[in-house]
Every structure is written in C-alpha cells, then in structure tokens.
Length: 476
Image (cartoon, rainbow, N blue to C red; front, side, top):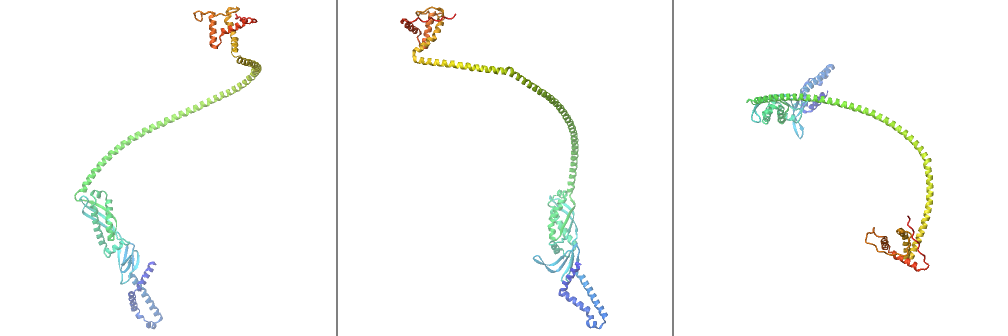
C-alpha cells in the first residue's frame, strides 16, 4: 500500500511535467476522437454508458502500462541509480540519485536507470615469483571477498568508476589491485615470517589494500592465504630444518617428560613418606595429648584430694584454734585471778611504797640540798678558811686510815723524818705521810703540815685549849 501511494505520488509529479502531459493528451485525443459529443448524443443511452466504460477501462489500462514502464523496484542486494536529473549533495550538485531497497518512478525522457549488484564477489589472487624480504621469490595463492558498498560516500566512488560495467570487469580491477598490494606486503616480510604466520601476513595485506580498495569504491571483507610455495626449494629446506628441530624438540620433550615423570615419581614417594611421617606425627601428638589429658585428669584428682585433705586439716585447725581460744580464755581468766590481780595489787602496793619512798627521798634530798646550799654559802663567805675546814673534815677519816697502824698513840708533836732512797713501796710510814702531804698541796694548794702546825700552835697557846680529840681507831 505504501509503495502504491509512493508510486502514485511520483506519477503525479511526472504527470505534472509539460512533456508527459502533452504526450498523454495526444494519446487520449486519438483514442477519444471517435467518441465525440455529437456521436454520443446520437447513440442510445446504453451504448453511451458502454462507451464511457470502455473509455475508463482503456484509461486505467493505459495508466497501468505507463506506471509499469516507469516504476522500478529495488531489491535488498542491489542499488538503483537514476541518472539525468540533477540534485543537491553537500556543497554541489550531482546528476543522479540512488535508491537502495524499495521502489521509485523514473521521470520519462529525463532519467535513465542502472542497477548495481551488492552481492559478494570471490576473487582468486595469484602471485608468481614475488620477492620477499631477503630476495627469495615466492608464489602466493589466496582468496579475497569484496563487494560494492551500499552507503555513501564510498558508493559515489563505485558509481564514478564502475557504473555500467560488468561484475567481471569490477573483479578484474580488484584482482589487479590486490596482487599489487600483495607484492608490496611480501617485500616487507621474510619467507619464514610469511610461512609461519599467515594470519599476520593477511592482516597486513588487508590493512594496505583497504585504502586502495576504498579509493576504487570497493570493500575488502576477507582475505585468506591458501598456499605459499617457491621454485628454489627454500621453504623445503626450512621445512626440513624445522622437521629436524621438531624431532629434536620432540626428543628433548620426551627426555623432559621422562625426567618429569621420574621427578614426579620421586616427589610422590617423598610426599608419601612425608604423609606417613605426618600421620605418625599426628598419632604421636594425639598420644601426647592423651597422656597430657590423663596427667591433667590425675592432677585434677590429686588436686581435689589434696584440696579435700587441706580442707580437712583446715577444719581440724579451725577446731583446734577454737579449742585453743577457749583454753586461752580459761588460762587468761585463771591468770587474771591468780597472777594479774595479785600482781596488780602488789604493783599498786609497790607504787604506794614507791610514792612514800619518793616523798622521803625528796625530803632528804631537799634537806641535803638545803644543807649543801648553806654549806656552799658558808664556804663562799668564809674565804680560804672554809675550804681548809672542809678539807680537814674530809681528811680526818683518811688520817684515821693512815694512822691505824699506830693504835691509840697520842700525838703531841709531828716531826718530819727524811726518808731513805728506797722505792715508794719500801719507804717507811713517815716518808709516805710526807709524800701524801706534798701531793695534797700540789693538787689542792693546801699545805697540810703547815695547817696542822698552825692548828696545834693555836691550841697550845690558849690556856683553855683542850686537847685534840684522839684519832679514831682503825677498825680491826
């Protein structure tokens, strides 16, 4: 329905042109001339209706024939090129329009229509004696798949170069271009590289030939290298060397495999031994853990037994402590009654006695201190006589001791008798007295013999003087 509407629209545009309108008018006049108005009026009504129907049918048939001749349908694998009528394209005008898929009407007398096939074209590429890198000539055989592009602007290049030409001519141009590119790529690779990596060789060829093919308006889909040979036996020599290398590599690989197998066997044996040792280690660890667990169990039992024994001893000690505390309390009470209380009473009595003795001693000390104070005052007030009297008082007992050997002899007069030359231990009593008086004089400054003479002289001079009291006798 859409194609019919489009065809009708383009048909209307074509009918709008002056040339088509004049041509159609001439044709219709020649067909309708026998059926002029006077003849129709003279005919019967039925015949007039039949004539009008025939005219309409003829017009429809004519339109169908015209549309059939002017309408072009384009398949999905081709393009239609309507040439002759200019149209704008980018910055300029081109004299054709392209329809890909669908249908279009050709403007009569102004446009011509050409078809171009878009299906794939298989081209066999052969190169004989093409020199590779290193100067070795090679023979290359391959298959290339090319096609005409269906999109602009590549399609414009195709139309400019191959519109109206056959597919064979297009394939010939593409083949020659590919062979030239193949020679160029082959000159950059060694025979070993070409023979070893055909895919890389094909990719390099596609890369180099792609731009040239685009310039021609063609698209290179795929390129496969099928066969590579040479006429000088170079590749055969490489093959033999490669075969020898492969055999050598196979032998090396076999030796490595055997070595790897032996190594793996040894590793398996070692792993088995290690696993065995590990198993024994685990068994020993389990046994040790069991022994440790048993020891811990025994230790726990022993600890529990010891703890129970300790608790029993503790309970016994607690009971003993309680009993001893009770005994201590009893002893304390007994001591309190038998010892402490009497001791406290004795202490209080002794304290009272001490207080009484202290009071007596204090009184005696006070009296003694008072007497000594008075004696010191008298001593200070009497000058030298007080000192002499004090010394005499203290020397009297000493004289009693010294003169104890002479008994109760009365001394009316004291005469100094010179001593002998013997030692102090051998000196007579008189010498000892003289030495004693000298020592007293040196130590105290009191001349004892002189003092006694003065006392005796003063006593003899006084008529009422009494005789000095006799010296006290030395106790037997």
